[in-house]
Image (cartoon, rainbow, N blue to C red; front, side, top):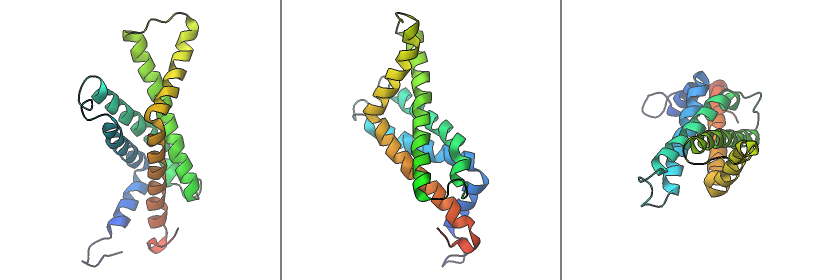
Length: 167
């Protein structure tokens, strides 16, 4: 399909890339948007000081890994047939990233600062970390991930149909 200037339609090119490399597209979309949102969640004075930049990169990396894991399902028009399923899969991607972040952050904290009281501390600390990370800004990342999931599915499925007309 060509646009007004005689070039290829950018939507078709983007949709073709997403269908061809769903893991890379999922990792790029989820990771980059999470990086931007997480960066602006911090207070302006705290964005580039202390542990905030490392946490921002860690959250973005966890979302990129989760996006790479769920990317193929997002672009599959049969398994993810509706926009609501794509949005729910985006939310599940964010929750998967939250679980990964909670374990990594808990491991870091247990290795450096926190001394566990008993064996149960190793189980409860990641759960508390996940809960408070979700309450802090995980809910916003979940909403953004719902939009990312919907957009990836929409671009891949819509432009994957004959002539680019569909869903």
